[in-house]
Length: 155
Image (tube, rainbow, N blue to C red; front, top):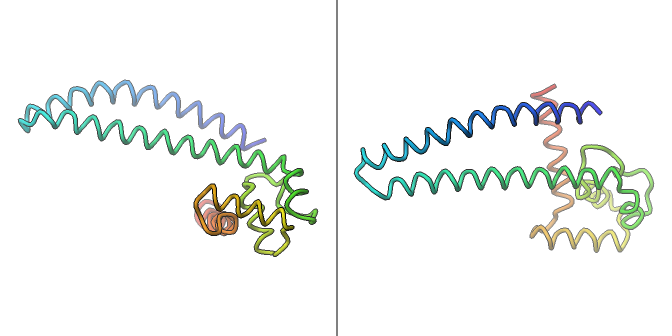
């Protein structure tokens, strides 16, 4: 539950700061892009400036969408008993654990060689969709490495 409240508080603060940064920043960027065009005497400077700004904003939106997707994936894992029953005969797995994705849960089972035939097919399907050779096992290894870094630097 503390993760929910921390997330809500962080979102509220980010919205407040964003409204300030976007309103002041947009006005400043508009004036700066005109000044840049005049001072450099290059009419295309205006368009290059705004292209970089919009491209960076689009990248930020992509980053947000990606992390919303990961959050959804984590919620699927918490409610993943049905997936667990499809991919393995084991009962003591990472499914239903918080802060872990379905891919990572499958990756742990794959590393432990505890996937059923349908679980192996599911893992191959994940490889296909994500364009990777070992998506699930790499996801598990990535999560473990990230937890180690978080423990070293943030706890």
